[in-house]
Image (cartoon, rainbow, N blue to C red; front, side):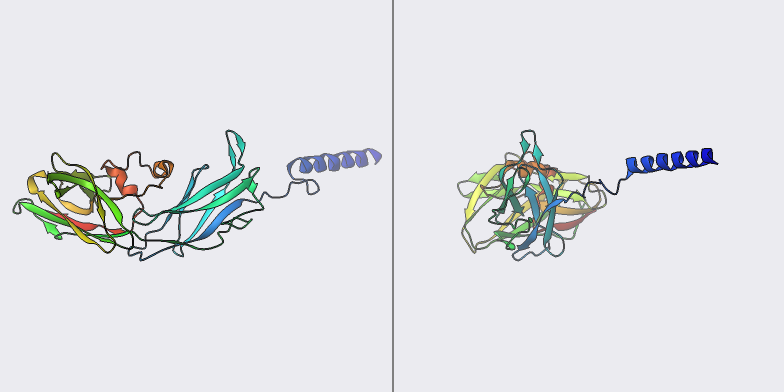
Length: 283
């Protein structure tokens, strides 16, 4: 009988040790709290309900706002090759045709500092951000284009400059002083989005032009049917234009997959923008 009791006690001790190795209710570590940046980014006169792009420098973390204009950035690590972050980092709020804005979050040894200006000590943005719209853009063109019977496709880009003088940049062919032919239209297949065609004029170049507040401009693209090398099908149509801003970090553009913003290519379509593209059926 004593032998059975010893074996039984030995079994209980072994079982206790095994359970202790996997989950110890007395010495388990408390759950780690995930640090978050949260807030609201409103956008003035947002026609297409395009979400704002939110990017945290230094850690290169990004997200977009949801349907309620809210953002959440989770900080799973605040370490860099040089150790824990100390000091300020900027959180940028961006849509291409809006004025870029930012808020600063301060760190002490990888944690939110007790002294903040734009965020609470819990990472909540103290005041909603309102992005100012610089330029409205809308594309118009005929709904159907038959390359066999029509010689020219006319695409119009209507641009309205709002409250600030703005530099708009596009590809243009220079005819003479102050006379330009707009160039550079991107056609993206709706059925096969990876299929992209870019139409340009010969001898065009990047041209920046300044427009006063309240200006209404139309860039008209005349595309010869012989140069429209698209297959039959439905397309989204994006005339290429840039709103010049000096304070957009290169690393923010890199995070969007854009290596050279001034070169017209498929990367342009990665720009977050409140713009209404045109649609076209090519026959």
